[in-house]
Amino acid sequence: MQDLPHHFFNHLLLAVQVVSNKHHKKSQYLPIVRNKEAQLWVKRWFSKWQNDSHLAEKLFLELTKWLDSSSVLYKDVYVARFSGGDRVGETALQICERLQISIWDGYFEWLRGLHVLHLKSNEFPLLQELMISKVALLTKSGFATYDLFQKGHSFEQIVKIRQLKKSTIEDHFVEIQATFQELAVPFRPNEEVLLKLKEKSFLSLKEMKEFMPDLSYFELRLAAVSGVEL
Image (cartoon, rainbow, N blue to C red; front, side, top):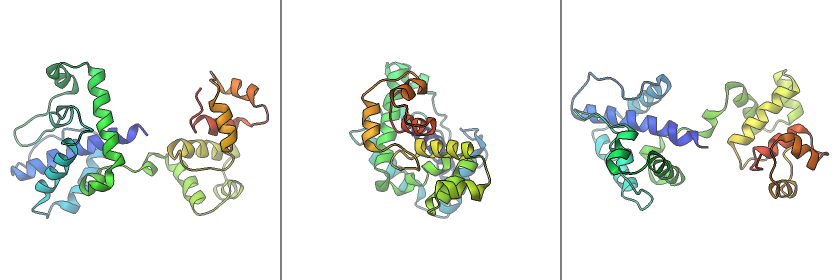
């Protein structure tokens, strides 16, 4: 999910600022990220680590290991954004202008490095704790359906338990399938059908329905979020 690196980077900017200011014994400052959810996330993270006298060193070592890897072409698209102590981070635009690269090149390099970090997250235990889980991206109601499904309940049982319209539970499973591509949710078309659909290019669900009239719109929506191009 593309949202995961964005959430993580907001957490990272705040974590670096908090740890750096603690190291510099600076207690009064404005958070570099104004998002309240991100602030609460990092506050919980920091409360776990604040008594660790080696926190700054541990964070520095993990950042160095990541930023020195071959997956990172421009370290400054990350490092120059950091704030802490007397340092105020630059904007993405300022960094790209200084590096003499386009804002889009800078953005895609930034995104690529973060995706690689997420793929190797087990190698970075401290940074991993700042990464948001896919489950957290589900809506509250979608998560309730996901939780019941993970506990072994069928589609029909979930409709009964939750006392919601069938179409609402269908919406939840489309949301769940889009979030967890590897998960086979109820009514998801089989791999053979998905392959046939992926061979074509569709502009709408209506076109998909004309191509495979035996599939319901719910099944087609699940196919669409399973990688079939619309």
